[in-house]
Image (tube, rainbow, N blue to C red; front, top):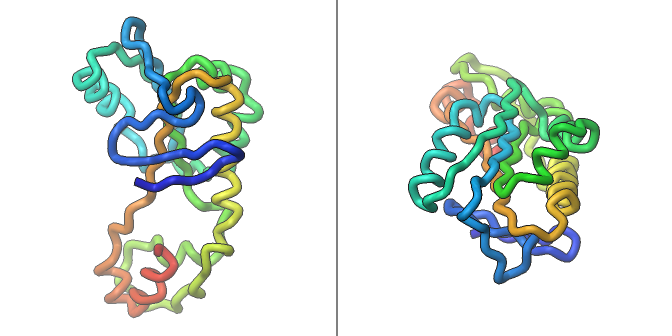
Length: 187
């Protein structure tokens, strides 16, 4: 399980439902009423929201209503902007017991990382190898999203989920001669 500190709140993310610090360490979600799931993602999360809701319904015995906001190519910074600017989305989050937020690192990462997102064995120049500091804008956008969720949920018990992008192009990147550099960038 990973833990991050956002403001004074520790956020834990794992492969199971985890209550965030929104409702305190002894917080429990009420299963006598339906839960709302707000799903904000680029196409990586497409087709997942309802499946996850179905599993939650089965395991927790509660109805889950899905509010699906999958937008192809959605950068995380745009997801943050949506949460700041869109009243309807803010209202959904304020009423949702479960919030999932994901977006690509586009607009929050170095420009040439796209070299490692091309599923092609064609040889090409490798990207620079970056440090975590180079991706700080992405972390900042994610922390901003958590801050907005905590503000909107106002201390209510809340499940917050995030997920990461997978690298399905390892063989192509190796054949293109940029496997080591791209692995370092993905890491």
